[in-house]
Image: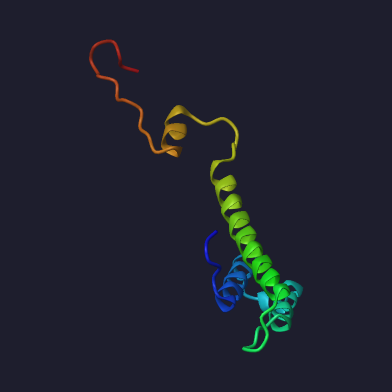
Length: 110
């Protein structure tokens, strides 16, 4: 299992994802208030290191991964979701290909 990112980095990542999904007024949303309250409540000190705090850190990492994956999924869905019929040229261009060009003058003219 990979090492978890520090709590501050995870908090900033979650807030970045909220800003990307909600917009510039993300800091007035209920989700922002909840995330900040949870991070303040589970702040670790030098004397206290307990299992509940580790579970909260793991949950926050999982939530950050969920937010990022959802944003990526929506972007890919928007890009590749069928918008009806399209020509062969546009379908080939969508996946990064080009159709071969037909030689002219030997019955291939349109």
